[in-house]
Length: 348
Image (cartoon, rainbow, N blue to C red; front, side, top):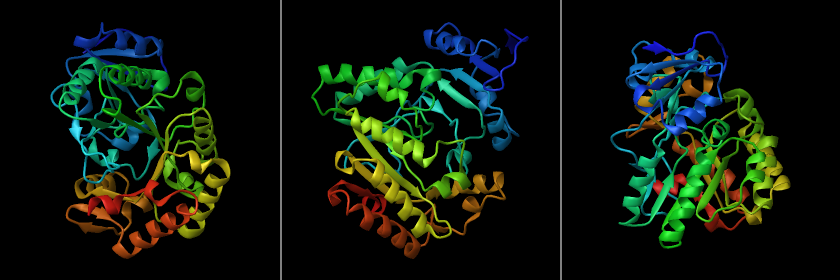
C-alpha cells in the first residue's frame, strides 16, 4: 500500500482506500474532493481491506474508513425471498455502495459483511449497461438501496442523481413502464426534494418506526418527526412515495408505540397521496443472525428468542400475526387495502 497524504486528519472517513485501477476515475476524484483532509491509501483490490480476517464490525462503525473500487462479477441480483417485490415479476437489486452510515442494531448488514467500513463502487456505467441488457428481455423492478442508505450518502456520492438521469434516459428509449427503481431510506434530508424534480418510475421508500424503536435501536438515524416532515415535503412536491413499516420491531407496549406512530403519520402526511405502504415484521437469515449475535451480545433486539423457520429467523406466527394485523387494520382506515403490501402474503 502507498499513502498519498499523511498530514491531515478527518474523523469521518479519515482514511480512504482507493483501488489503483480507479484512482483516475471521475467519480473517484469527485468523492475524494469532498474529503480534502483524508489520508488516501492505494490498494490493489477493495477486498484486501474489506474482507480481512479478524475485523471488528462494531468498532469499525465508530470510525469508518471509506473504500473506493470497481464492482466486478455479478452486478445485479434476483430479489431475495425476505424482500418484497410489490407485485413486480422481474425483481432485482444491486449494490453500488456496501454498508450504511447509520447504525441500526437489527440491520442484517452486521451479519452479512465482515467489515464496518464502507465500499463505494465507482463504475456505475457497468451497472447501467447490465440493466440495459435486462431491459431488452423484460421489464425491470430494481432496488438500489438495500445494502446501504443511498439517499443518506447523496452528498458524498451523488449516485441518486445519476440513477435518476439513467432512469429518465431509459424511459425515452424504452416502454414507459419498462423500468421501476426503488430507493429506500431513513434519511430526512428535505433539501433533496428541493434540489430535484419528480421522475416517473422512481419510487422513494421511507422507512418509519416508533420513536421508542428509533431511540433504542436505530442509532444515528433521523427522528420520526424528521422523517415524517421529509415525507410530507416529498409528497407535496409530487414525488412518488412509499411508506415502509418494515421491519416492525417488538418492544414493550408495542401496540401503544405503533399506534402513536400511526397517529403522527396520519396527522403529518396526506395518506391519500402515498403510492403504497409495506408492512412486515423483523426477519433475517440464520447465518446473518449468528454473526449479529456474536457482534452484539448485549443487544435485546438481536438476542430476542426468534423462531427459525427454514433458515429464516422471525417472531412466532402468533406474534407476527398480531403485530402485522394490528398495523394493517389501522392502515386500512387511511388507505385502500390494495395499496398495503404485506410480506407474509407475498412469501406464501
